[in-house]
Amino acid sequence: MTFRLTALTDSAPPPLTRRLTWLASDPDGTPLGTAVLGLFTSPGQAHLSSLTLNVHPAERRRGVGSALLSAAAAAAGEDGRRGLLSPAVEGSPGDAFLTARGFERALVLVYARLDLTVPAAPPALDEAPLHPGYRLVSWLGSCPAEWLATFTVSRTAMDDMPMGDTDFGLVAWDEARVLAAAKAVADRGELLHTVAAVEESTGTIVGFTELVLPADRSGDAQHYGTGVLPAHRRRGLARVMKAEAVRWARTEQPAITGLLTDTAHNNTGMITVNRALGYRTTYRSAEFRLPLPS
Image (cartoon, helix red, strand yellow):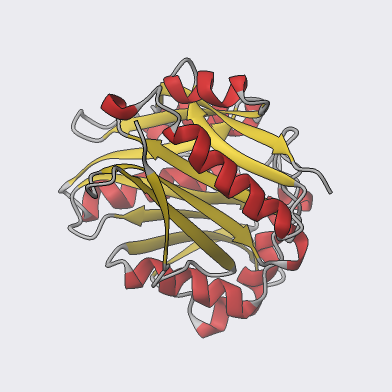
């Protein structure tokens, strides 16, 4: 059977990313699948691209996925990218598809969920003591001006997070990017909640955790980044910040029924924090990487 690929226009690209999109369809216009290629524009990631590829289950095994992949990989190569990342749940058809086409398993992510419909865990697990010399602050939406400079510096806490063999590069954060990321969440109608740890002696933010609530403020919310600057680790700050985010969701957002998080499988410290707070593994996903010819 024949089909055609149509390039689509991206009307709302995310910050620091260009996106190319293709639609595969039958001659009569019936959609079969899509491919979205992300071309990162941040200086530390200009070598990298990402692919989200979907084919309707009833239309698989007729070459649609391969054609979409070929178009995306060619575009990424022409743009000078040296790698193409694409996710797939372990053991899924996507896993088999990417493996068969030369993608390498570069990183395994553990997905977990905290069920907020059951009673809170005992205080020893649900609340963590705050290490002396620190205090917590929190805000909704964009970072307040008084914290913006030091919060931006704290984002470098994510620079050494485990990324396997993805060749992920460094995400360069400045104040403009911090504000743009918060605006992107708000533009979707979602709510960004941030908890930060402040070192009292310097008045600077040394760690943070972010939670994003869906537009209707119901169902499951999604954890975004959690990080602590190296000099302040091993003091329980990640656990106490995340515990505060859990407490806030339980007490201030009654329609939120669960919290979702994902962590690199070898990030044992964060996995330990999540388990202590009651998160339970739901599935594992792999980030696959396809090297592209230079």
